[in-house]
Image (cartoon, rainbow, N blue to C red):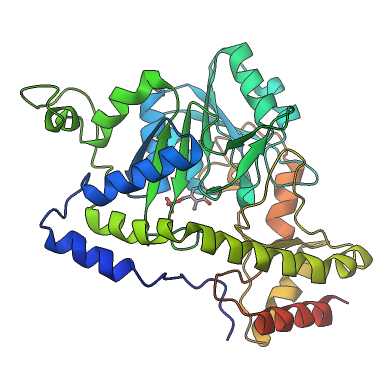
Length: 379
Ligand SMILES: *Cc1c(COP(=O)(O)O)cnc(C)c1O
């Protein structure tokens, strides 16, 4: 059987977990957490990083930090994971869903401005499959209308936005806040795990307080205050050192992991591109303003029947492929709250996108088997 995903272990995870356990500091914000924070801050120019127990939690922190109030409107793609929306819905916000681009599942930046009203508080671009959204356009709009930008960079670790002048900026470092995931289906993992990136300095201090259950405990341990107590709202957003130790092993091997994943991505692409053109199947498109972090490989089928047939055929050959997301604007939870606008591209990806097996240990032989079976099924 060829699985859809197989979490990759570098070999050092258990070793660092052992260290974390036996140094006696197992709760959060210890040595491994700090190592992870400075790795990200140094490698990607993130202003301040805070590990969280998930990207879902990082998004919830972002929603608190921008002071989301009942009735606020938050613009985001409909073609995304539920957590992108839930974080803001939990604070009473109304989600204004924007369509995807015709050639890419990412939010269509050209369509955002028409959705902005006096109630709009933030734009939440999701870098789908790790590919950058049109950040110059989105940040320009945010500046013009005085909005916050929270990047859902769950899939975008080690990827970059290329500006008009050719300069590269790490995804997650561009918006006021950014959220990453280290769930076992992502490039860099810790089982469950995530990170909030605080780029706008006005949020630095409060982010740390919300992270530590609404207390000024972090400042207390740095000796900046002589007592610590309840100073704001908050929750337990920080992961234990056991999680951070696992993540640290992965970060030490980030370059190797990324090299391998990029090779897998390119192999799929090279071996499928002619077949795709001949059979009107779309392969992932890398926007000119994005680099590629090889988070996933997907096909966009002609219609839902073709996709169902492909997934079933691959399954009969013991190959697991999966589809996602069901457009949030037509979900059982949100469809009655949505304003009724049709989002045709989002619905099209819901019906036609299929993700192929993608993991570090995927062999060339298995990849060739997958490719042959795809051709058998679709030709
Ligand atoms: C994986 C993912 C999330 C959620 O990440 P968790 O760490 O599982 O909470 C949110 N948004 C997007 C786009 C994702 O891919």
